Image: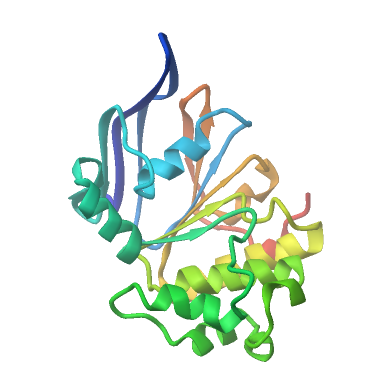
Length: 233
């Protein structure tokens, strides 16, 4: 059994009498400790896929499993616990609390999980030990995204889910953030799923899943992931 399994996954949204199939017939696996990139054009179904894996949405059919547990059959209460303890989220626009310092933003996540990493320690891991007392408005975009990554990693999640994590960043800063995700998660053994429209970053992944028109078009394994420093786009 794979660490993450999608089997026959489908999601249909109803708008009045109109049905929109966001996902259908999705089947693929992710192994523990892998970096998996889900790539596809806007509207392909990537975000819906990530939201279901993260417990923020439920499928219309099919199953999703993590570490032997069928997430797709969880109750609302179980999904809340799953999001709290098992999943770390990194979004395109950081979602930091503006009136809390970098350290306090990370501590906030630490307060809701079972065995958190010390907030100061995880900030040091992402290179922000000297910025712990700064508020988000006093940080650059890249620094804010590093705080968001630290906040997610502080939970010691089974899964780190990243939704276009470099979408709001310039090229150089975006590369630095992807390098941080790649290096930190290799060191910690965290399973990472990144969704993106940027085909050029797929060489960094162990597994590349291409999504189009709401379903998986291909799954490619990469035996020798490329360091971000060697990738250009």
